[in-house]
Length: 240
Image (cartoon, rainbow, N blue to C red; front, side, top):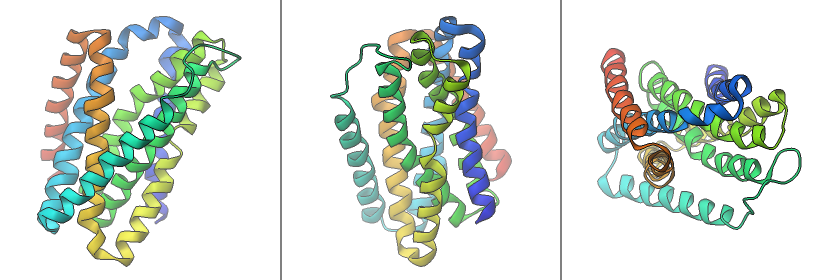
């Protein structure tokens, strides 16, 4: 359990790493966001299919996995709709746009934590590590997304970093919850896998890739293709 908490906390710290380019480059860091989002999209897609859906179908019935996916997609859509009413203009030290991005990522972090906890419970040595690495990589551009509007609103570098880390705090919490639930009720494993995969795929298709595509199609495509190849290689290396 301690190892799981440390690994999941490490993914949260990776979000803070995404704030570092903004701290160093300021608004110019926005130029590489489409590339980072493309990388995040590829990582999430491979992790969802290879790290969650395939193990889910191996361990449970199709109806259980699809039911879990439906719940995960619904969770993400409801959370996204709840956040849509927030104002987008800049205001105050942190900026309302920064607050919006922070809150959206805060909600999105929970199913990612579920993915970590579920995978770790199923196979800590290979599948669990694979999902942890995938989540950590995709957290980097999320941290950049939090930091850019904060920097534009005049927030300090330290505030940018810690706000980015804080947006992923639900990940270790969700990891522990999923781990304990699956540990007590093993039948929940395929449903939990499906939930995490559904939410992560929905996040990729609805937000991450479209946001990158609007910024720079070429960067997003290159980032996506490169990360898919890299994640497949990582999967083969770990034997997932």
